[in-house]
Amino acid sequence: MSAIHASQLSFFAAHAPFDRMERAHLIWMIERMKLAYYAKGEVLASPQMGKAKNFFVIKQGLVRGARVATVNQDTVLELHEGECFPVGALLGGRAVTSEYRAHEDVFCFELSAEDFRELIELSLVFKDFCTRRIAALFEQSSHAMQAQFSQVSTEQQTFSSPLSAVIRREPVTCLPDTTIRAALQMMRDSQLGSMVVADTSGKPLGIFTLRDLLERVVLAELSIDQPISKVMSREPKVLPPEALVYEAAMVMAKEGFRHVLVTELNGKLRGILSERDLFSLQRVGLRQISGAIRQAESVTILTDLSKDIRLLTHNMMAQGVAAEQLTQLISTLNDLLTVRIIELELITSGLQESIASQTVFCWLALGSEGRLEQTFYTDQDNGIIFTVPAGETADSMRAALLPAARRVNEALARCGFPLCKGGIMASNPKWCLSSDEWQSTFSAWIDHGSPEDLLNASIFFDFRALYGNTRLSDRLRSWLSKKVAITPRFLHQMAANALINRPPLGVLRDFVLGQQDTLDIKLNGTTPFVDAARIFSLASGSSATSTVQRLRDIAAPLHVGMTEVEGWIDAFHFLQMMRLLHQHECTAQGREMDNLINPERLNELDRRILKEAFRQARKMQSRLAMDYRL
Image (cartoon, rainbow, N blue to C red; front, top):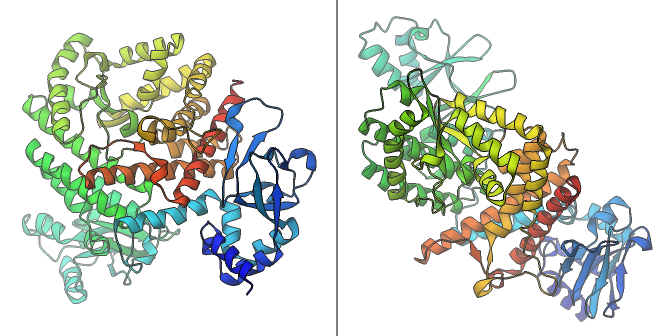
């Protein structure tokens, strides 16, 4: 191989996706590339040049891309060493939509469009990158992030594995008329702790466990010659084979189940997963922690368990659990913790058995908790909605509920969830309101639309029922959707407000940095996605509260291509994972957690994906601006 090939191989080995391509494919590409020079100000590609003719990889210098016929600075893209363009135009056989101009003297490797298409068919890695770009880069970065936490064996099953991959044996079943005695004999012979009861076609009807044996047979002094159908637990939880392990873990944690059945599309039993199976694979104690939370008899015990939650989630990061799954798991465990605190404090306040605590009030999770997007660093955002029974007033109900709410907020603070500095908590009389008062408050925000109203809407409109009468929350959500639909001016104001917060991409450098050369990965990174998704969701009438589900829901009604939506979602997930990684590092170093990232300390790949994630945020904001003519 010539010396020039060796140096070029060294260059490409330092940049994605070329660093993962087979050597033979790289050599094939290099042999067909030419090195071109562009002086400062010279145009490399533009819409006026017609169908894209070359694939560019920047070897040295800076290229800026901007939409033609626009003065909007936010359309400017900066491309640096190792970055490539214009993939979309080459794949679509069309002209570029931006003008790419050398911002300084630039050297580029160029590959003809014909060779580009041939390389796609030759290299699966290159094809995957070109067709999924940010998703492919994100996956590569995720592996690197995971390596920072642990050298977990690649053979170990992770939370991202399908259930079909962790089922180890054929299921053992019995018919519903089988006697308890016969079923127990089968369990002993097969060394099982449970027995699935199924019909003649193999469809599960129930499950019989050792707990059922104790509670429904031994303690009830029931004859073991009775049919198993009399003592089985009916309607067991089932998941399809393609469901992921983390979904089974969440079911066990949230519902308190010890077993999950895996069934085919036709309902036939495929296998059974127990908590022992699950956590022997994962070496984590999610089910144990959730069980301990449910049984905790004091806030002191829950305070200790909150530390276990953080330790568990850190371990899950080491096992490669994805950002969406991880934030949902964190939020699910935090939900369980909060619910148990509410139960304990209602008992202390003497409200546990009263009508008020069971049917006429609902504890609302707001903000990131309402969206199931909590990270390690989060404060409290919550409220209460209640109805007013006959003979009572809103003020009398508030007076009865506020002392318990205050105790709950203080207990959550002891468990590591700081009191909200803005006072957005259920113990604040402003946010402990009747159904009519919530509607009146929301109406005022929607009708007036002051800056403070818009800020409140960005927090409160993500509400989710956590404890109590969930119908109160459902009715409020339904009312809100109808109210927003007849007040389009409010969504226009929300969109204008959301566009004030721009992703920190620089014009003269990669990023716009704040104090100590940092940027806020939450405020300037994830928040633009959260805000835009909320507005799109309200406009389309979606009842979802999570950002990712909102984005998926709006694709069809707003005529947004799923490819574009998946790009937004991948970028949002990357930013969430970067937040989690940074917060973990803060904890490991004994520093107070925050969301401030120094891009200069990131590796080349993560810097590149961070820029792409911010570009996706700008694309999403551009869509928002176009829809609302801003």
